[in-house]
Image (cartoon, rainbow, N blue to C red; front, side, top):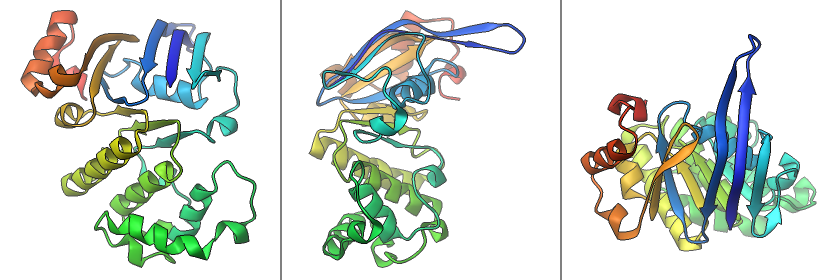
Length: 262
């Protein structure tokens, strides 16, 4: 579904220094993959997601989604089939619009429509049913402006919006990092349900070792723009945080444990 071929990207500072993030990265995301991405600061995790989204232009290489080369495609065109949930709850929703209006906009993503057409009353109960599964009371606030919701409620809404019309690729950029532990667990369980139930190819950046191990069928570790670990299937299920650190040190012993998930 998603192929990264020969990806190269460097950043140049005003002082003339050069930071080479990717030096020819190759990576493939299969149709049923739910991949946790971990790694140290500067490993290239966010840069990878931003390159896929079109926020960053690679120096070399290709990005292919479902057989289409999207390397030079404008960001707004990618938004029609790639969805992203951000760490900041305020980035995935429109705070001045109601819950119902936000869901209606997401429901008509990539389509030409007027707001009246988008606010389809027949969909209202469908939205309520989806929201009620979160057990956060958002289904009773359909006419509330999203800016008045709690951070957890807004992030939950952002997840529903991002997956309302099954995207070809879903990107999760530390989407539970700003939430309290209870709400984070709710969102992660809902994420698992949606991703695995709809078979949405997903890349999830996380600094939470337990979540990286518990969720998804595959785990990759990035370091200096390279995949230094790629664990999947039964081997991933057998992981513990201790085993994961041990596996990491076999490959890249110079990184300290506290650098990995800070």
